[in-house]
Image 1 (cartoon, rainbow, N blue to C red):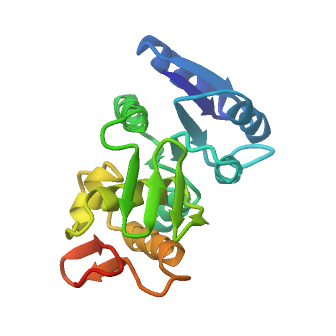
Image 2 (cartoon, rainbow, N blue to C red; image 1 turned 30 degrees about the vertical axis):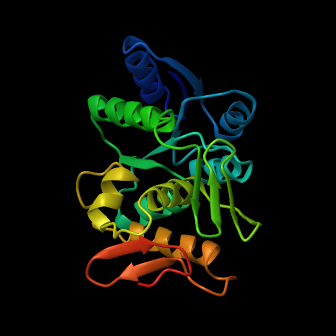
Length: 228
């Protein structure tokens, strides 16, 4: 597994490089955000590990630039900022996971390996269709009524899961486990935020809604001509 580590603390970087190297992976290090962004744009990585506070370009800005270019490489943010708002901001910026400092390397390694495995998981159909909503998992293209819809990486994975379970209610716990890989409640509104953003993209400009909130139960994606 090829991992980009963007970390400006020399001792922390050496620790990570040593740890991932001993685990059989190939860590590539950058000490500032601008160089890290260049590497992310010019080379292929399995996972990005980004310190939040970086010289020249901070980690969240780096990640936003990467996502704006259509790169969906899984990204884990490392930060000493561990408040709920900080974690939510990191996830909203395109992060797939967020780990606060100090941390145990064993936990970081496990999280990174899970992100890489999930990204390379080809289980399921390449093309999904629910009513007039179409999704191609290979090209990562989403359309409704032929109109292209641009989604952030987490929104895309959320929609994949909802389409795979179209017509059935999915609970918040199911979403946390299957889309975020959390086996605990992080006590944030991250699901509400992403559901709201996804609904705004697949329903807002269309006559009939597809993404429904089932009060007290969860969410359901269904074809627009289906009875509730």
